[in-house]
Image (cartoon, rainbow, N blue to C red):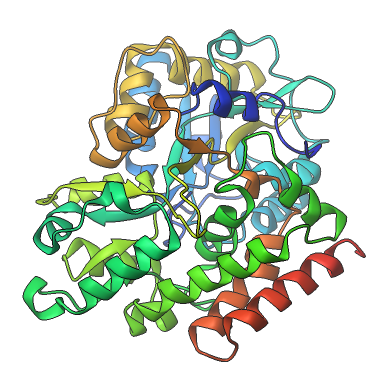
Length: 435
């Protein structure tokens, strides 16, 4: 197992007790310099640097409620998935302006391992199996959600085309379905079969280089099989045939994608095309639930496997998308820990995370079940034991977004073909080990 993987992560996938992205968009909160604003001057303010723009409103609503109940001011600073989270945090650290709580993913552990407070003694720790655990056994990451992703579909459109989403479990099944849907574009009222965005300028390398590449790392493998992600760290590609099949599937997705959204579109463009029912599939996960609810969803939805292999692979990727760490030098350590405990262990906190934010709770004691459409579907996959782990979160820092992500744009624009795409991925893996 990769040394960067949280110790309990794979166990969860095997026991089917795992329930786990990311959205694009712009940063929505400006945080003033340390101690420069009235709200910071009372010495009773804590700050969360959140990496999921979709749950910004829900977190701010809960922060306001928490302030009213406790007198502790809570500032929520949210940033979109395409932004440089670590770069911004490094700037805050250099300026002595670190937030009390900050988001990190598996690849960010090495960057921030000296800044984490030890949370091992917190009450919520025994209530979850997806906390981030360091190699020496300390809990440093608070899991706020479980998310899942694959190819999210409009079931109403699939029904009109006579396609059962349960059959989409192999490359050939998708190739046949895409061809059929493409031939029915006028009848279905769609512009494209797939809504997918691969633009570097559009900030979509988090979706391609992390999430889509993550299907190559895990789909169809035993949950304990870390050979592909270990190869990323060791500079080797252990199964070139698997990589070739993956590249072929990505090309299939691109061939049936809306050209503008694929090459030039943003996250918002990708969502709009699908929500307007102008595409049947979208490469996103249950984190788009708040967008669907806000737009007044009128069609049935679900998530199908990113089944790129020729063999049958019936399962989606699910796991903790990221964690919130606590800054060890925070002036308000206890207030920060109390806030996290309230989110995890109170009814108001459960409601905020599950109902208001539309997520799946990672805490065993929660009695609040998701009502958001995609979250409900992810939970069904989890209960059925049909999930693959998020190995992509253990990639080296920046490897997915900065190294692999731009290769998808080259494939999308036909600057390279699927074979050269696979060659370039293999070369990038080898070069990474030399750094």
